[in-house]
Image (cartoon, rainbow, N blue to C red; front, side, top):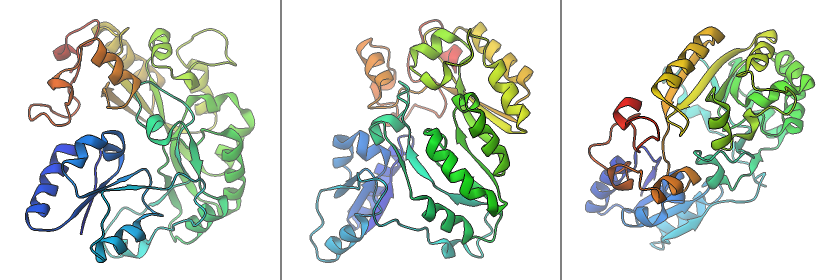
Length: 330
């Protein structure tokens, strides 16, 4: 039995690998974002699909395959937190030379509904968290003291994030995670972030243009506390006050963007002296509001299915921007 996790970017290669296994008589199960969001396409390339989270349904799939009764479609768990939490088997990493950090997941999903993001449609705009006792047990079982929380959005729900951080305090670990800039509006949360050992966050700033932020529906970037648009200067000051390293992520190619405004974004990142910065071409992911709108406006390139097109290259424009050419954006 071959099990393939399919992300959108690797769909074409996943289909090729699946075809080779099936030619050899090995049944293929596909799961992950792509089968969940583009189900009909993946039906053609696999014997079975898993939609949503797979942990709790996987034993049944293996048993069905063993009995020659593999079903064409399985629905993963939609109950959160999962009643029978699945802990990571970390012994498979022993002796393999991996980096000296521990990867831990507290939650999945995000309560925000940014128009370009696949997290929202996959998790139906839920922020699903594990029981705190399971997370702490996961951390305590490791000898390493640097923890990377691999969540989609670690501080989506401020109250629950605070509860976890209070439990992290006595562990004396150092940790990093993905976050959102609205956390700077909660002083108690920021104090707990620093006290519990946080070293920094990956934060989606996306754009320094207010109209672009509004257009992408990124509500967490539009401050309710700080009046007036000052391009995040107060939020960045708060992050620095709490000694956090920031990995700032930007998406480029929104309808208000111009070649000049993109360079202005670079200037902002340099002046903010972020520890890291990532500049990503805006991607029209399937099943997102952005994709639906660009498709209706006939602005998608590569026949709309850029993830399958042999001419598409990673981080190149897959649509026609409003105020520049695709080549200029790339």
